[in-house]
Length: 109
Image (tube, rainbow, N blue to C red):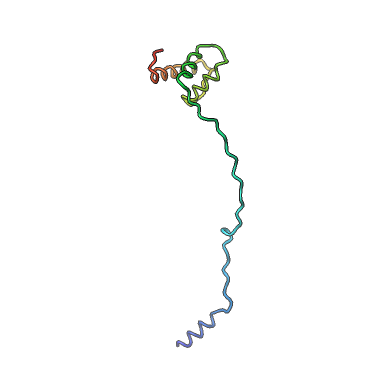
């Protein structure tokens, strides 16, 4: 019986090895992509106490030349634009600005 098994095993063996198919997903050539250019951001603006006080004082001025300064300071403090177009929004934002100055700088306005 052992001889029969050995003959059967020999008959099953093939002289040439069977090649396995390669994986087509991992063997694909990788394409090199160029990294995007770095985005240069403006440095973070941190207003000083003088800037904050100047912006608050300029709120009473009707001059439109100081609007960018007021907006820049207000955006740095509260992360939103100052809405000059709406009287109700201006009143609320001025009150918030005044409360900020009173609590952080202990100045009575």
